[in-house]
Image 1 (cartoon, one colour):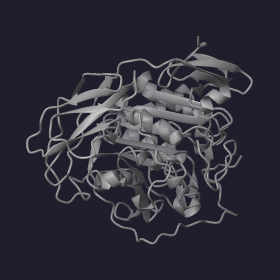
Image 2 (cartoon, one colour; image 1 turned 180 degrees about the vertical axis):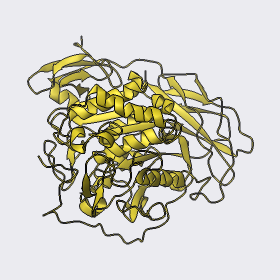
Image 3 (cartoon, one colour; image 1 turned 60 degrees about the vertical axis):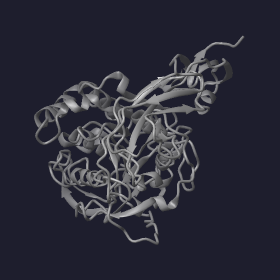
Image 4 (cartoon, one colour; image 1 turned 90 degrees about the horizontal axis):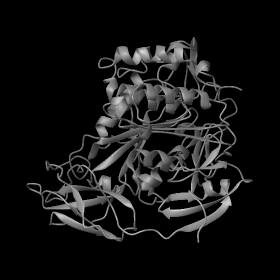
Length: 499
């Protein structure tokens, strides 16, 4: 099978999206620097891993959809890191030596990796990259101290080399087929899964994000690299544009997935912006471009980059996976620019208010919770956020707030921002969690294991269906095995029957 990463584009008509707006400067926003994360598919997955290792102090979460270990192609031909190739422990040791030797110099201190939240996804029918390189990546993270609770690895049957969604979009390919645009309705919301891993429970998504929130920006301000396009895209929710403190996620497309090749499909058909819009998440979509010049690589000989892949094999220098790597440095500079705002309007005016401290919960009922905090000098009021979404329509003057309309027996997380007289917000406080009282009446569902997963009552791991919450093994994931699941709490199911 020819490589999705490196085969030519003969017969594929390039589609360049049209826009009524010229590229502008990347905005400066109020970004919570403790909540900057990255994910990517294919070459974007390899680049997400490189960014997460090189800048482990910046990226608190890393999501890899069908990628492989750090520096794999730095020591072996790229083909040894794809095609479901098995990567030996000896090869992993060689890659680890780079991490060890570069720690604190060419890359951030490797100790930061252990604190990252990691999300890994691969289809069991992915023969372009495949499960084995992802298993090696999982081992690499474990070898660098990532705890089991922070490391999620999802494998799905009948899923090829694609970005998985749970909705249909015009022009998408079948989940079992590795063809353009490599975005598929697989009955699995990959964007929700990876963002939930990083940010916890999310507010319900908006399936029609405003077109005005997509901004085309000038990438030449950050690099003139031959593999990076002149413009990129960023999605800025209205609240974030107005000066609210927001999170930042970098979403990296794979080969043959830049805007010049597939239009806006990676931006709009992956689902990232649907969740970002309602959860104060800015999404940066850096863009590559085709580079037909043959270039020396680290270990794969001389190659061109005809599919606009992110550099994970060393087209643009032997330091491609380090902080000084031209593409790594460019993306980090974009992140720094976005996170450099200090107040409303994307950086103008601004507020020097400190984030509230001492946030705590109390007085739980089955439908409400009291959130309290210490006052901030100079604050005109405060906004309260539940699971990332703002619940206060206007700033509250008091230093406590009763949040109501909650579900019984459910754990929530709250943060608080201080607001100045101009409406500009501080960064968010440290989160405080609390659980409402009461219980959820047991409800039973009898269906095939496949139906349980598509309905969101179970998930798949290693070809088996596991009940959400309890993780009880229900047997093989298919339409032939039938199981009764009893719901005992929100998104918590056990195998059993109801009275």
